[in-house]
Amino acid sequence: MIETLSLQERLHGLLKGRVLTEESLASHTYFRIGGPAEVMVYPADLEDVKAALKVAQDEAIPVLILGSGSNMLVLDGGVRGLVMNLSETFLGLEVSGEQIRCGAGVRTSRLLALSAMRSLTGLEGLTGVPGTIGGAIKGNAGTSLGAIIDHLDWVRLVDRLGEERCLARKELSAGYRTCRLPMGSVIVEACFTLRRAEAAEIRETISTLLVRRNLTQPVEVRSAGCIFKNPPGDFAGRLVEHAGLKGLRRGGAQISEKHGNFIVNLGGATAAEVFWLIERARAEVMAKTGVALELEIQIVGSPSAG
Image (cartoon, rainbow, N blue to C red; front, side, top):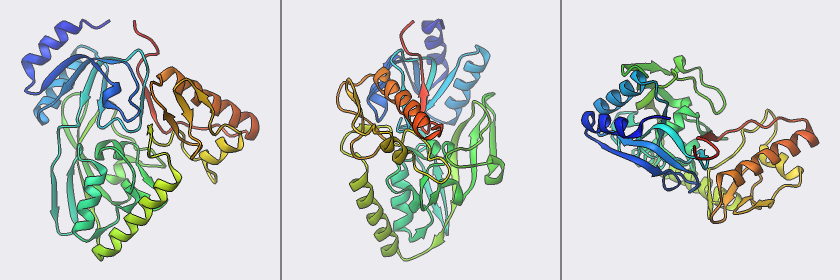
């Protein structure tokens, strides 16, 4: 067990940003589920990020990077170690010609809106994708129109030793819903090169995609987005539906009746209930189709306190 008080005191002395203890992570994720963070910091700037990572490295403390918590299930026991919350940091956006430089804490919806306003196309694949740019890059988020990495030039990050690095797209070895970043690193900025197009056409594409999303996904209730990656040549939601699991409920959690690849929080759901549904879906799909579903969401923390 980490000595929380001494860690908190050390971080208070080093950082300009806020330092919290036993902060509920349920209030920091889209699911609204999960236990507390042992220590959570809101870095004020790049130097705070470097200092916090150096402390974690020196004291062998695990670090979880948190943006908007859109693609994450925090287990009921919470997260031991340090949670670095970037939701209030790295919010800059700068347009120069066909390039956009973007802070990692910027919401995907804000970047998309800016690109449309400036008549720049290429990021429409982010339509309806929640979260921040840093998290979207880490998971190579996107839709059938394309992924965020497709138009990425470079990312600036801080590695676990507290050193800044800049990596070009080709160095990230990105694949479907994956991106290889240096272990323990924190993305702080990204640069995209887009193409000129008519703003009205871009907005029409975005509007059409949003209407389709609202019709096919359970946007009216809490979820963490797609639970599983689509297997090659198929769709995870179709496989879960084929297994007869749409609508299956466990406590306050339910496999969505609208889309088989979503688990929703109907109110008061626990992470244990969500996890039970995940494992049930994987087992049933494997038994009926022989397909091993791979998680798209990130599951973090411990099942119970202690």
